[in-house]
Image 1 (spheres, rainbow, N blue to C red):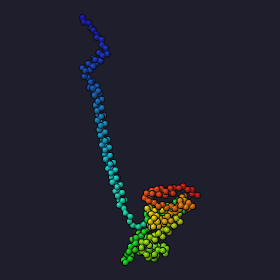
Image 2: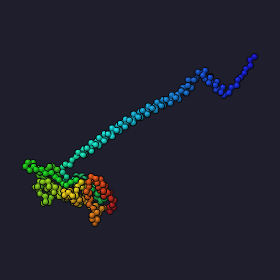
Image 3: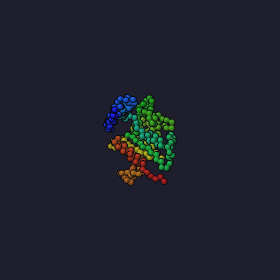
Image 4: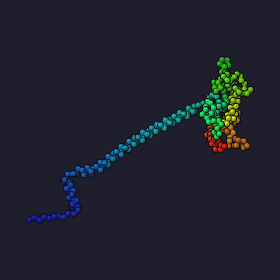
Length: 283
């Protein structure tokens, strides 16, 4: 007779038995082993993907930096090219202040050839012309009386040696000038005198038509006789300020004239803007 003896086991024994059974019984182990193994595999895959994305972003960033660098270098080269072209410029030709003023007046006027401007009589509407010049009026004389007889280079008033329809017996430049202007004197000095008279008449006509004329002389020296004459003409051409008084004589309005240099030009135009931005009540 055999006695059956049951050996009591604790939790440790039970767990040991389960592990043993698991090692001997292969059924269903593949899923469990896959589940255990997939964790490090997915971690490695994620690491690989992240590293690949990092390399892609780095490549794109480097390409963008290269493109930006090339664009910046091109801009610097283009900017330098522009500066070099400006530095290479040299003054040439003539100065014709009355013609510039005339075209400015035509532009703001509601009369032909430009008819888009507001009516000249409209209240509260300022028509302003700013004249900027760096010298006295000039017109180039040419000694060709023995053949072409043009007497000048061709410019705004045409050839001074020729007459034109509507100019009568004199050339256009000499029309409506005083007896101080020699009508058959074809010299640079006489041309300048004629232009000065044309400018004086044009300035008066513009101001009488309620055009606000502001004049700016650029790099003209008051101690130079020729420059001083041009400064005086520009100052006389300008309108009176509606808000400021003359610092030398507070009983008079200040003239809308600025004697500017390259260093002061920006501030001078700020003063012009301030002059135009003053508010006022229109009755």
